[in-house]
Each structure stands twice: as structure tokens, then as C-alpha cells.
Image: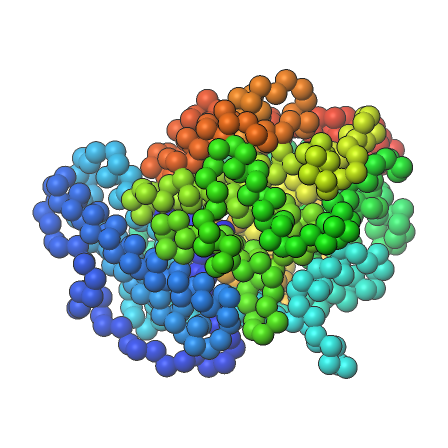
Length: 617
């Protein structure tokens, strides 16, 4: 998703190339010039707080629209000029928010009506990476963020003979090749692009922490963990609780997949009772395991390969997006605006560099909905389209709220909405849409479908945790820059049960080879989304009147389910997230029981299939 929000939905989105930074116009010292409608120094009264927040709302609209216009121009046309404009817009936003948080302190301790108090609280979380007040340090931080993101976006692996490959090319190799040497070459190649980022990242950590301390957070990680309507330490404990609920299912899936990979690649490469080498799992980061062909429980059942049908039908990117839109409108959402179809980017242009990482936008914060994505005719991209449209339809529901409320109930909600609807893209729905020839008709076919889903939903869970656990330790100083790579692989081994494909040293910076590290995008939201989406799905299925097993439910066409979902999304961030969850499901806490219910048939099957295995690592 690409839209700065009040609860950590913003990321530092505007990267630069590796050339020396362009000249910049020096900013005046904070407070010396009022270039916007800077809040007047009202006395600390309720009415003064109301006027202060009205002024902030007006300024944020101007700043965030300018920043997102610049960001869109940059990400869809990577040049030195668009980079400089985007960097300046990000720096201006960071300067204003840091200064305005300081101005808001005069209202501390003043009893405020709930909507005003909530906006004050969200203001202090409004910048994902708060900037130091010193203009030189603020400019340096903005430059580092753009340089890291640019290095990632422009990353490519070139062979001696001159052939160069982008990330999409290397990902295709990992997804389709089953030759270990080829897989290792692709994996190693991409992980070279992050090596030059390491000194930039370590300096970025210092500056971002300084910015966080200036607005009264111990470090940047504490700020990120404070965006969930509970103390940061309580949030950490709650995330650990959810992980412990789902970990046994993950460990069973890991055990089964490792056995099938060992059967394919041999015990030397995939030893029993050890972590799985990361390059063998079909994805550059082993976050989802795209190896269904190697682990399919039952051969001979109807094909579940949606990508094959998309290719055979010559399905265009626009047609794939329209499939996603159709699902939302079937629930009662308004169609996407005509400008969505003319302003979005659906394919990689041939004439310029772009950031292909999929994202959703409301550039003008008023219904200017877009997605940016280099779409391929694959099932993975069809699911991603649903995910990104989930952001856009969420934007659509709350774009009349005050700016600080224009966000999801928490960032896990925002990431989970599109994925919730994708759970309703069942085999029957795909048959009805012409994307599968036949749906599973027996338990064997159902088990194949559950395995296919688990390789996405369950395999991802520990990865969804470890990105931010690594960063939290970096921000707190627990992990110094001399141990970045060791700590990264320690966590990957401990949580994921995957191992480095070949020896790695502190010369490498393997964390930086994942988009969300150079882009400063908090990541635990994706773990939460994997939990919430099943919780949302169960609630919506009940509202739609579904009575069968949860994994067979599709809410497609249910206006009743749609209205309840719209009611929750329309709240934006105006209420604490437990209240938003209550609006949808009557629950007030994250609950993994819906995920476990969905995969209960697979868990039982895995228990039997792994009886002879030595599970764990």
C-alpha cells in the first residue's frame, strides 16, 4: 500500500539513485518562517485544541497531497529530477510533523473530547520515520531514504556477457526452475544489490532514532509498536501470543515440505531435522513457498493452476484488475472511478525505470485511486491485485474523514481487507469465472487446495514476524551494525527454519534485499493481516449465511456481508481498532482460531503424513 496514514501506514517512499545528491534549497530553521497555516499559539483550552487540529488538518492535506504527487511521479519515472522533487516533499512533511508535534505538547494533560484526543495521539504517530529538527540532519535522513529505495528499485544482476536481470526475472527463475545451481545463482545475484546499502542503513538508524527521541519515543521501534491502541510492550506480548497459537501448524507444514524437498534434492542438500535452504522454496525471501508442484498431496486431481488458464486466455492486466473490482462491487462497493483506469500503472514501461513493487494510492486523498504494479498473468499477481484493491476500496470508504483519521483501524486491518476477499476466490468461484476447468470434488482435491493455500498463508507467518523483530533489535541497539547479517540469519533460522543457501558474512546485508527494509515500511502489519483476514472471513461468512466448512465459503455477491464490511472500513482510524473489529465481528481481540479452523483438515492430514519424520530444526 502506498498512502501515508495516521497509524504507521506511511513509509519513506521516495528513493534516489547512487549519484551524488542534487543541490537542495536550504530550509529555514524550524519556526523561523511560517510557510503554511502554522497553528497559532492558542491557549491550552478545548477550543484552542480544536482550532489547532483544524489548522493541522488543512496543512496535512496540502503536504501529503504534494508529497504523494511527487512520490507517484518518482515511482513511475525514476529520474534524478523526480527523485529530487520527491525527496524535498518528504523532507518538508517530516519537518512540519516534527515541529507540529512539539507545538501540540501545550495541550498535554488537557481533558479533550474523544475525537480531539484521538487526533492528538495519532499526530504523534503520523510520520513513520520522524526527522530530527536539525535541518542538516533532516536533509541527510531524507537523502538516505531515497538513495536506499532507489538502489532497490534500480537493482539488477548482470552477467559478464552483458545480460542483465531485474528482480521479476530472478523471481521467475526461483518460481519455475528446479535446478539447485540455477536457483542458487539467482538467489546470490539479487542479494548483491543490498551490499552498498549497509553503511547508509546504519546511518539512517542513527538519524531515525534521533527523530523518534525528539518526539518522546525511546527509539524508532518503540514508535512503530505504539500504533496499536496499547502500550508497545503489551503489543509485543500480544503478537507473541498469536504466533504461539499458529506455530504448531507452521512446524507441521515445514516438516512435510522439507521431506518432499529432500525426496527431490537429496539428503545432502536438504538434511533431515535441519533448516531448509532458503533458495529452494520458490521465493526470493522464502516468505511464501512456491513449490506446490513438488509437495502436492494427490496427483491426478483437477488442476488448480490458475496461471495456466490466464495465459491460455491471453488475459490482459486490465482484465485481471477488472476481475478484482467485480468482487468488491458484488458486495455493494462503488466502482473504481474512471480516473483509476487512466492514471494507474499496470505494466512495466519499456521507456523508463519504475518501482514495480505493487502499491495502492489515493494520490489526492479524495478518491484519486490508483494502483502501481507490473502485472504478469499469474495467480500470484491475481491475488496481489485483490490485495491492492483492498487498500483502494478502504481509501474510498473514509476519504471524507479528517486527515489523521484517514487510515485503517490499524495497519494490519488495511493489509488484511483485500486478502480477506481473496479467501472467497474459491475453486468454485474460479470455475464460475472461467479460470479453472473443474473444482475439487472429493477430500483429495480439497486437500490439494488446502496445501496450496497453506504454502501462501501459513508459510508466511514467521517471516511476517522476523522482519520487524530484526529491526526492533537494530533500533534499540541490541543488534549493532557489526552483527546485522548474523542476527538476520539467526532469526530466520529460529523462526522460519530456513538456512542461508551458502556461507554469508557481515560484508553482506541480506535484510536489505527485501523491499520493506530500504523503504522503511513496518512489516508486522503483514503478520497481523494473515491472522485478521481469517477472523474477518469467518465473520463475513456467518453474516452471509454460510453454513459449511470455512474453507468452502465465498461471500461473493453478499450485500449483507458487504454492508458490514463497509461499516467497519468507514470508521477509518476514528476509533480504536478493537471497536472497529467489534463493528464487523463482535470480537475485540486478534484471534487465530479462525485460521486454525480454516486449515483444520490440512492439520489432521499433516499429522498423519509426518508420523515417520523427525520434525523441527
